[in-house]
Image (tube, rainbow, N blue to C red):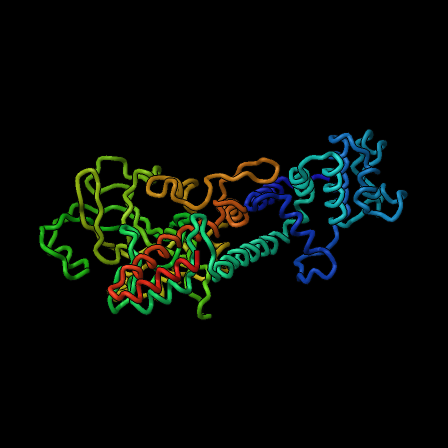
Length: 473
C-alpha cells in the first residue's frame, strides 16, 4: 500500500514536470486500451499492491464525497453485475479494520476502470474531476513511471499538430476583427515580385533591394512567445575612438578602441510563432522564428552587482557578439565582442553553432533563424527551459508575450509553466488565441500593401487596387 520514500520523491519530481498528474493518468489509460497502437514499455495491468492502492483511493474519494461505492460502480459500468463491485473498493469491515493485506485476486487490476470510477464519482457529486484524478495518479505513481516519457511525447505531438493547423487555417483569406481581409499568399507574391519588406516602425512596405538575405522574415506575421537562454560567453568591452570600424573582428576592435573591461554575457533567442510561405505555393506554414539577442548582466563600468538575479536590470542587445555589437549602460554606450569560445547550454543551439562558420560575415550578422515545429523542438523548449521563472515577463519582454503570465488549470489551479500557457493560448476561442493574434499581426502588412498599390503612379493600377479592396471587403 505504501511506496518507497526515494521512489516517491523521484516520481513526484517526474509528475511535477507535466501539467497535472491526472492528465498524465488519462493519457496512460488511453495507451492501455486495446488496439491503442502504442508499443508499451511495461505491463498493462496493475500489480496486487498497485490495485489495492487504486481501490483505496477510490474508496476514500467516495467517502469524502458522501457517495456509496456500489453507486459509483453502477454509474461507471465497471462490472457486469453488482456482485463484482467489491473488486473495485474496500468494504466497510476492511476500512474499519484498516486492512492492508488482501487475498490474491481481491482487486481488479485494470487501471482504466479505476479512472472511470473517479470520473463517475465526480459526475455524481457534480465536482471537478481533475483533482480526483490527481489523487488516483498519486496512488499508482509507481505504475505510471515507465509510461511518462511516452505520455509526454504524445502531448507534444498533439501540440505540434495543433500549431501546424494555424498555418493551414490562415492559408486561406481570413477577415480580421477590424474587417481587413488577410490574404498571405497575395502579400507574399506582391512582396516577392516587387522586392518589398515590411518596416514595423513606419508601417510601410519598403524596397529591400536585390538581396533579401537579411530581411526574408520581415513580411512574416509573428507573435513573441518567450525568451530562451541558449549559451553564454565572455565579451570584451571598449570605448570607440570615434572612427568607424569596418572590419568586424576582435583585432580591429582593439586597434580602434580603448578596452574598458570584460563581462559575462548570455546568448538568448526571442522565440516567436510566425507564419511563413510553405513549399506548396500559396500556402502558409507555422514556424518558430528565433531572434538572436545578447544579455549582459551589467555594463563594464557599472558599480552594480554583476549578477543574474534581476533580468529586468540587464542590458539587452540585438544579435550575437560574433561581430561587433553595441550596448548602453548608465555611463553611456560601449562596443563589445566575444572574447572567447561560446558555451552552449541548449542542444539545438549547440548543433547550429557546430555547423556554422563564424568567420563568415553573413553568419555573424544574420543569426535570425526559422525552425520547423516538431514534437522534439517543442519538448526541448517547453519541458527543459533553463531560464529562471518569469524571465519572459521581466524588463524588455514585459507585456509583450502572446501568452498569459499565468493560466488557470482544471480545478482552478494557477500555472506559470510555459507548456500550460502555450496550450491555453492555442486552444482558447477568443481574441487572445494564437491564431487570432497572428491574424491581427498580419493586418498592418496587408494595409501597407493596399496603400502602396493605391498610391501607384499608374492610374489603372490604382483603380484596380481600389476596386479589388472593395470587392474583398
